[in-house]
Length: 479
Image (tube, rainbow, N blue to C red):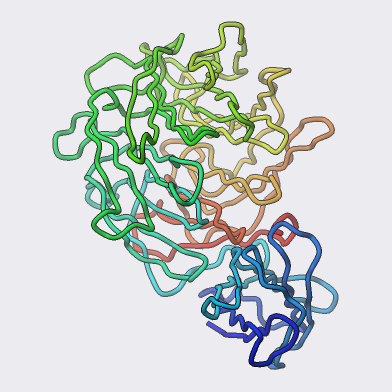
């Protein structure tokens, strides 16, 4: 790692606040930002396209920035150029500077743009089929899944904090497989992660409990367990609502019919509680997706695909209305290709892309569908021949495009290392798919999530212990 000292405020004097950002760099040479002709360092408010102050310097030169006010939403941007071309970029998560606080040392991950960078310092445990979620403070949390070498549940909670660059185990959960994770609560003061459903590895029955995880709490209070048999199902969905609740839909308990149930997890008087709603799916389903259609208060949840009680893919979608706690009786929409084990990704315009999955014959699907409330489902493109169609990860980038990583081309084929960017054309609604840098290793059933610095954290999906990776998108959209 490299360090630069950055002076804030009007001058570097005794009354000035000094920020010393830590510049983290990749382990692999092909993602390294260096050598560079020049570097620009800038400070701005989070979300602003206007720099408060900036300076350009060459490698080895000292840099000093002045004229920066105190604030709690400051971001440092670092851009590297060769000639006139921008080839590298990095930024910090938002941090605060005040006259009474300690000297901030925010971390900035600096690498070549559109590259997968290997992380040094910690090799995560092998994990497939787990969850990666972004906490309210912008860190990445890995949880659930199994060790592919011995098929035992991975109980470790692994945490990457881009604000400090620290990657560590912060606790453990009960041994279970096939659980789903979603954020619970609406702000950092009450933020938690709920781990729901799956199979209890001890009894091989449905996991009749919910675990509530608070990554920033004291170690002995980091994981709470709530016993609740009504939610003991696998292959369910767990969707965070705008009001902080989680809606759990469908799934199947071992040796039981496929479920039509809808449950709610909410924080009541500071404690998480589970409640079964009166609402029921019209069609029982498992291995489906449930996608919240935006961030507006009461935004609906689109339930699409999955398998019914006959193990057949379902074409009819349903629309859950959180304010009435029921499904819309007038909503009608059918998928062009009924599918299950697919990914659903919300796009900037409020539409949803249905990517990959399996059809009624167990064949991998290349056709991409787009859902809109006005037009229902339409075919908008195809995955490239070398892209994963199942067991891949789909992560929304800061500019609204989608990063598709790894996976398998069909259930019996080996994992791939290919990665692609999906972009929605706002004019005609089509989807463009273009290749980007390859993963360092092939991955399938891995985890990926967007961090607060705009990079994508990718881990798992291998049978060997390998480094985690961070994908560094272009600077556009990362303010």
